[in-house]
Image 1 (cartoon, one colour):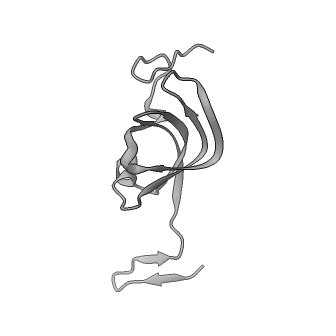
Image 2 (cartoon, one colour):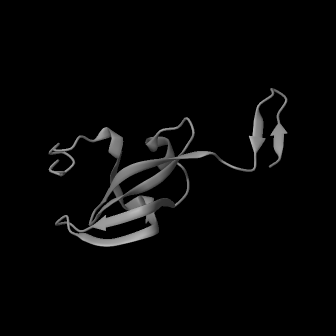
Length: 105
């Protein structure tokens, strides 16, 4: 891995470090759960404001409008124009009516 330094001492690498974040993504027709990748030190909203047309999701589960599992896949890309809302799973609470989860085990 090569490092490049600017005149202020900031360094740049060929790789972008990202953290995996479990998230719930709502589109107009489906709800998707899986991992999205956020640059270190940034928020989910920062990632959504990137210029890329698609958002990568790994370990994805896709649910229909009735909450039934339709598909599972290791990798999925979601067109950002079709995302209605997205929330990190850590920000949800089991049994919370806003997430649609029952909280039962």
